[in-house]
Every structure is written in structure tokens, then in C-alpha cells.
Length: 395
Image 1: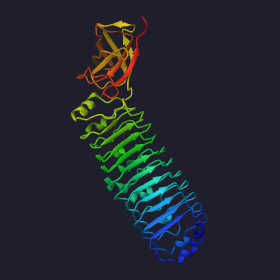
Image 2: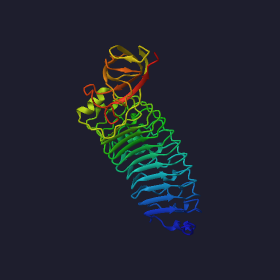
Image 3: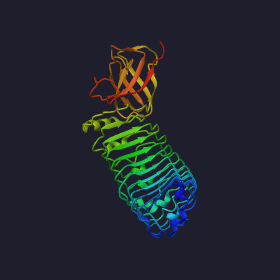
Image 4: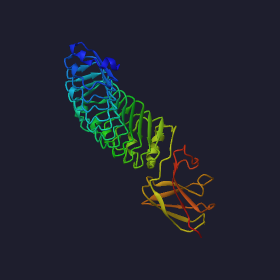
């Protein structure tokens, strides 16, 4: 391949005859200026593993491509500016593993992309605003991933006209990303929607108009995400997986669902209100993969404060944090063993109940549970979960 690449200057005589341009692993080529006379590119352009190439001078004649464009693994490439005449691409756009490429300037004139868009593993990419003119996204996946210094995807103004992604929408491993509001007009995603490893985002407002997802919604490992607000209009997704988002305080934004998912995983989320589980039951939803939610409150005091205590007396438990239902169940003793759950009243941070006469215990465990099914066992597979426990003081 390198022997052929050394003769690249001979291509200056090709005129406008190229339908496919593939330059790959040509380590001695530092310029494409020999292609300046080619004005009729119409098919596919692949520029891959060209370690000496710093720009794409020579490709200014490209206006439309029917077979896609791939710019991949070019160690010294710092500019795409010579692609400024490109207006539409069929067959997809891939910009990947260009470690010193800072922007996508050169894509400013693109209005139509068909076949997908992937922007991934570009170590110094800080600005993707050049795609602001794209207003037609006809097919394929939209993937932005592993661009460690990219701060925003919020100025693709043309995307206000894009209402559907036929493939997947994937935003993943973007540690500097703070917002992605460019997708706020999308109402449907044909396959998967993945929001993963975005440690700085606090909101899903960039998905605020999404109504349906064809396969799965995955919200995973977003350290600062505070709520699921932005998903209020989502009413259909076959699989919902929400995991490892330690700052999320509730899942109430999901209460508008008209069709519930096959997989429901809310690990690391605060416990949703009882009305949410009532909604599940009313829609005959079967939990196939339920993971207990985390503590969103803690038990801070018990009166009387000494024990063990025996049944038949009134007990008051003070809690810190939200208690989303007025009826809770209290289990006294080891929750993994036999316990007699007691329905208690919760209000204003205080849970009050009367211990069963047969009970003597040094431990209190507070559970949420369906009060109309008090005999249902406390297991991780049931729509019940341990929330907090407290040990009585010594006698």
C-alpha cells in the first residue's frame, strides 16, 4: 500500500473521475493537495491511519457523497476545513480516533446525513458545533462517545427539525459533557437510547420531547444526575434499565408510562412513592429483573430508646429524609428470618405504630411494602424493599 501511496501525485491528472477515495495506512503521505483537481467525488471517502496527514487540503471539491465518509485513526490530523463544500452524506459519517482533532469545522455546510453519525474517541475534540446546519437525519445510529474533553452538544440548531432517530441514540463516556439539548425535538428512537457515563450532567432535559423508544432505555453511571425529569413524555419502551446513578432522588418522571417495560432495574435510586408501584400493578406489569432501590432516608431515633422491648407498647421512630407513603410496614427483628410486619403510619418524619404483643426485639427494620398484601414475603424479587434499620440501646 505504501508503494502506491508514494505515487499519489499522479492522481492530479484524474480530473473529476473519482467515485470512491480510500486512503489507508499511507505513512509517507503528508498532503492530499494532488487531488485538488478532482471535483466530482460522488461515492465514498475513507481517510484512515494516515499518520503524517495534518489536513484534508485537496478535497474541497466534495459536494455530495453517496457512500459515506470515514475519518479514522489519523494521528496528526488537526483540521477538516477542506470539506467545507460538503452538503449531504448518504452512507454515514464516522469521525473516530483522531487524537489531535480539536473541532469539526469543515462540516458547516452539511444539511443532510443518512446512514448514521458516529463521533468517538477523539481525545482533544472540544467543539462539534460545525454540525449546526444538519436538519435532516434520515437513518442510522447517532453515537457520540469517548470524547473526553467535549463539553457540550447544545448548538446543533438544525436538529430542531429532527424528530426521529431510526437507529440508536447513544451518548456515552463523555466526562466533560454538561449538556446535550440539541436532541430536545426528538420524539422517537427506533432501537436503543443510552445515556451512560456522563458524570457532569444533572438533568435529562435534552430528551424532554421523547415519547417512544423501540428497544431499551439505559441510564447508567451518571454521577451527578439528580432526577429523571425530562422523561415525563416517555410512554413506551420495552426495556428500562436505570443503574448506578447515585444522585438521582426519584423516578416520578416515569409515571406517565402507558406501557411498561419487560426489564425494570432501579438500583441505586431512591425508593419511588407507593403510587408508582400501584401504577405498575394497575397496568398488570410483571417485574422480571427488579433490583431494590437504595436508602433515601435513615432512622435517627426510637422511643423508647432502650431495649429489648416487648409487644403491646407504642413505639415512635424518627426518620430523616422523604417517606413517600403514609402507610409503611415495620419488621421487628432480623428481616431475613421470620418477622411479623406491622402496618404503621408515617407523617412529618415520624413513623408511629404499636408493637405486636408477641414481639420482643432489639432491632427495628423499616420497610416499604404493599399494605394490602401484608403476608407477602420480604424478598428482593417482590415490590418491597428494606430501607433502613436501627438497633435499640442496651437496657
